[in-house]
Image 1 (tube, one colour):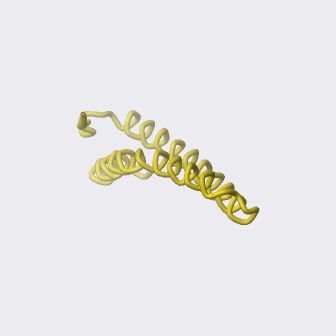
Image 2 (spheres, one colour):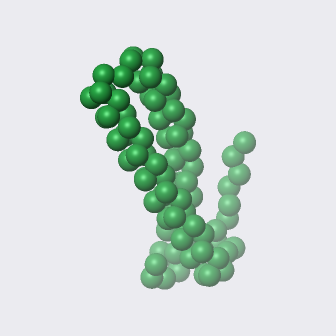
Image 3 (cartoon, rainbow, N blue to C red):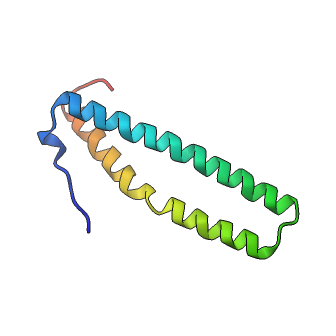
Length: 88
């Protein structure tokens, strides 16, 4: 179930706070993704079994599934901030 948020009703402070929250989430997930890829690379080099690599790929798919929603929210916030001529 998808809920859409009307960011035009947000105050400037609320918009900037929401933008900062999403930036923190993006940074965290970038770190998690980098760590995951590092483990995956290490597993491939160290000769891990195919089953271990398969589990890592499945986990990678689960981790990456939520990124699109946050990206859409971030773009909507950016568009609202741009329409108000604010500097972020």
